[in-house]
Amino acid sequence: MIKAKFILDGDTVTGFTVSGHSGFSEAGSDIVCAAVSSAAYMAANTVTEVLGLHPEISESEGLLSLALSGNETEKAADILGGFLLHMEGLGEQYPEFIKIERGA
Image (cartoon, rainbow, N blue to C red; front, side, top):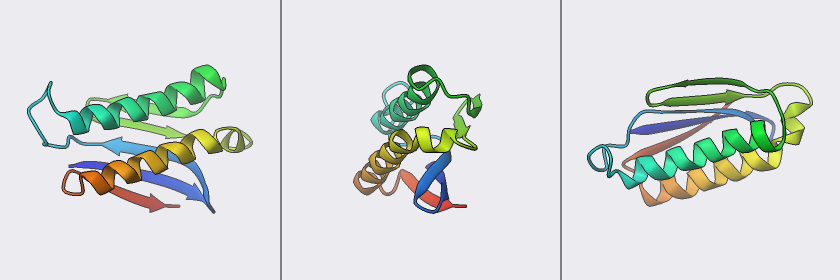
């Protein structure tokens, strides 16, 4: 199962961690993993390369996390908020393969 945890400060997403594998299909043809990975990397790349922000990022096999602090949080709010909405939609489509958590 893929677990996506979103860190919030009020209604503002300040970071996320996406981990695990969906198990929807075999590696290389798993559309759920592909959708989640693509969305997570698009969010992270937009924050770093397009907005020019400097979040703390951790990446390894089956894991991507991003954390912002200070005024960078405000600058990335729309991107990370959109990522949360996208993940919630995927979670509704594939509830047995994706779990979404919100936390502080």
